[in-house]
Amino acid sequence: VNAARPTSRVFTILDVAGTVLFAAEGARAGILAHLDLFGVLVVALSTALVGGVIRDLLLGDTPPAAFRSPLRIVAALLGGGLTFAAFAVVGPGFGPIVDDIDAAALALFAVSGAEKAWEFKANGWTVVFLGTITAVGGGVVRDVLLNRIPFVLTQSVYATAALAGALVYYLCRRFGLANGWALALGFVVAFALRLLALLLGLSLPVVQLPAS
Amino acid sequence: VNAARPTSRVFTILDVAGTVLFAAEGARAGILAHLDLFGVLVVALSTALVGGVIRDLLLGDTPPAAFRSPLRIVAALLGGGLTFAAFAVVGPGFGPIVDDIDAAALALFAVSGAEKAWEFKANGWTVVFLGTITAVGGGVVRDVLLNRIPFVLTQSVYATAALAGALVYYLCRRFGLANGWALALGFVVAFALRLLALLLGLSLPVVQLPAS
Amino acid sequence: VNAARPTSRVFTILDVAGTVLFAAEGARAGILAHLDLFGVLVVALSTALVGGVIRDLLLGDTPPAAFRSPLRIVAALLGGGLTFAAFAVVGPGFGPIVDDIDAAALALFAVSGAEKAWEFKANGWTVVFLGTITAVGGGVVRDVLLNRIPFVLTQSVYATAALAGALVYYLCRRFGLANGWALALGFVVAFALRLLALLLGLSLPVVQLPAS
View 1: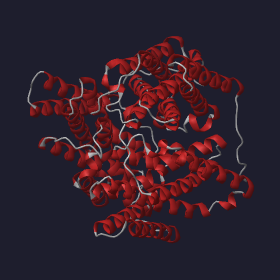
View 2: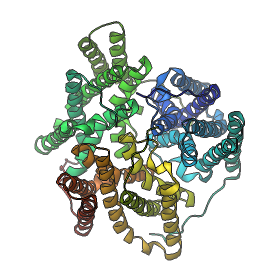
View 3: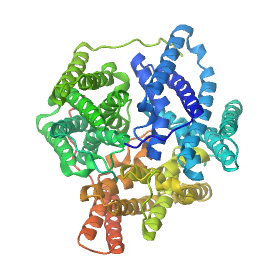
View 4: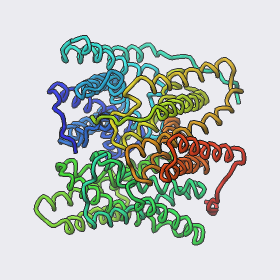
């Protein structure tokens, strides 16, 4: 097992915040799919942890950070459990705000994934793609578990927003900005793009096939 | 490629036994989905091998044990092939016993996954979660391949049983019991819990959503 | 991060060619599933890159080759983008040829996966299975993303063709043939078997279950 490289305190804070938020989103998806409390928590854990686990596997940092301390597991259980309670008490009217929560989690994971790849001295392509995969990986697994076509295929400005955030992070570091600024700018770009897409309902061209 | 660390003989026996049993379970699922012999064997191999492959990837032990020797591949092909033959000869009346086989495989993989993580000097969280993931990983992939919602989301006492078995294994080792006792106790706890859940049809609360 | 071991120039050429072809196949699948341009490109990238990423993870070669240079990402975007354009201009009449393209990609990845495992000094089982998984991995993820039962389960001579090609590659190297010959023979066997299966519509026995 590799010695884990040190990661910054701000990385850990962002990563755990993203974990809580994605767990909330995963929990909502599980509740709407009529799963019981346990199933909801499994979806919440998967949505929240898988992106980071894939990131760590791709960087060869094993066992993944998600399992090296209780931090992320407890954060995901809290995020999922609180969302279950909120739905049970407040009802589904509480739901729409979760789209914004999801956008924030997406942006957090895009920059935390990019930062970790940067700290591992990966090149630019790896930094940008690892940020993107960290951000969308959990959601893909959530949708696959719930047996539906993943968000990432049908929402044009979802992976793109994450990619833009990771790219901004990378360019900032490349041109010498401090880590904190790079994280902040990358986050803002990814978050704003995703919110904009939600507001405007952006879409791209589709090939018109003749009716079969 | 890392040098594989030595694993105990009893680990190998349990791991291969779990492989045969999960292959039988996977084969049944493939047969009931009307796949041909080849598709049935692919599902059997996936169900039987993926849990251990994920375990080894998460521990950084590559290439995974499943590919380092013919042992597990042959065991999975045997388990899957014999189940196909049994269904062809005896018919689906043979099926229900496979639930018990699945429970035994779940318990075997929970403790063998936990043991391997322990031997790699992983901490307690990693030991318990790796045991659980080893046990449920193959079944998740089986259900995803067959395009249905994974068992692990709808059967409350499935991952929980594996987690309990891995936890018991960890606590036994932590408090100084020999490996053999830890394996036996962990297995019994996971197996008994899962059988109990099958008998009683346990379930957890669901959020009641208004009809949409 | 591990130092990447050198891979031969011919490996890179085959691997990138397979990437372009699989991207075309993935793009067609996305178009037929009525995804927009972005969704089509995500499916194309997944189909083209995931097989090689899994291969590299299983060999412990991280970060995977797909992310270490722009080569494969650009190749996949080109293959996917050109296919989207071709469908938009020529229409779906262009589609059937993609089955042959897919067969060629399958054969290319089977031998490039086997070659890489061989270069990493893996044993015969690992070489043959890694070749097979490299070849079928992308297609499985494509079908899982599109929420349908993977090809690999229902097309008997799909994984088998890849396995045969990887086995031929391994046997050639084992008996001292040059890498180029082993690649050529392995490719021809896998490609021919797959085309033959497409032509003949081969199938294997199914267990007849009583109507339920």
